[in-house]
Length: 297
Length: 297
Image (tube, helix red, strand yellow):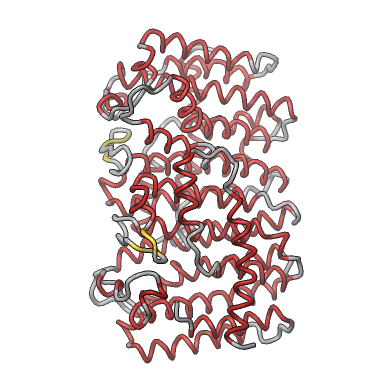
């Protein structure tokens, strides 16, 4: 599978997610300004990596991905809410996201906060309305998402990020712990919840979790590297913003070359976890892990 | 049942909720500053009205309230998150809540936003972990909560509130619609979800919903009245803040006396919906509706 094929497969799955997201807030009677703000960020593009991981792991575990689409799309709502809130003036104070003005720049802070709150809440509504899967599995998978997105996961990581920003003498271990929560936990939960929805057994769940954890870390290292060497136009945001904001990153702590090596190594560790899996989906995951490390946006 | 008895019964149920809330974030390994900020607002007191309504309706529908306690407590987490975000500078910019500095005044805006996000996320985790109730009921009840708390409910109402603040020529109907979402939807969902968890039938669900809707409205009118005639010390916040912020309220739109009459009338409508219910719980609900209208804090 070439890089082109990986991108094509990723885009195919993402197109399904995109289609679902396009209609999920329509004709719901949501007050107009709020709906507009929610859709503005939700439909701003992006790789839709997290929902795709949920779909793929559901397929590996043994269910058609169409049956878990609302759940997968909900994960993108969670990811989007986190970006809206992270961009707020009180947080990272970013003006651009994916080449467009950030949510609060367009709708003001109050609506941006509410659009984030609403996307997070709708996400759980969407997850819980998955009807083609046994209720026990839906409960377990949604509960995994709450854990990964909450104070022991993504939100906790964002708090630690705020605590560490601008601080001197941060240890590499602290940085890794922060990213494991801020980025890794949601990616891991995306894989694991898909696996659970698909009816995976204990071994599958362990594989989904460990692959997700390592890919999440590789993804974050690559993200840090791109903030140094990436192309502004491709990224849709200014490079060097981490440094400007006093963020501790892999390149700032262990250097660019060492960061690149670490990313490759962690992606390889991820793939060891799924070495016993065959089939098109597992093959895609293996190539995806490698692609994530080499991506340019 | 005297007013004293209503307060005593309410306090008894609330004490159970309080006890659960006290421990639900402990020993979870949450990063310290985030946990502290979450607990600061969660344990700041309050009547715990919403969780108590969930517990009572669960009992009416036929289940021990202890079995739905995590779910009921989760509702208070949702309510608390909404207060933290509503108080933010970009929203109502309030300095005091229940006699204490608001969350962002103590922990800063970034942590206050994250504490709210985390409480909302944890709430779903807590709801989904209710294990003594059939999974289908838990799914349905949590889904009702997502609807009541989300863009078609509480968050939608807060957006409309922002849109209407300072605006001239607001119609009474717009004000009612705003409050039905901002306050009413969560109170209604609290009653309905309790009823569903308890195994209530269609008639019970209709009664829970209609009683909740009307009590929610009575509660809001009483709240608006208290902001005019209340005692600052009892309320724990300055009176007159609605007027100062250019908020449209029942007293500002239909006058104080008319507002008082409307509250009494709406509470009576609520109780008509449960006229066929007997037993201590239904009796408590009837007196609670009346008490809510007359409360002084």
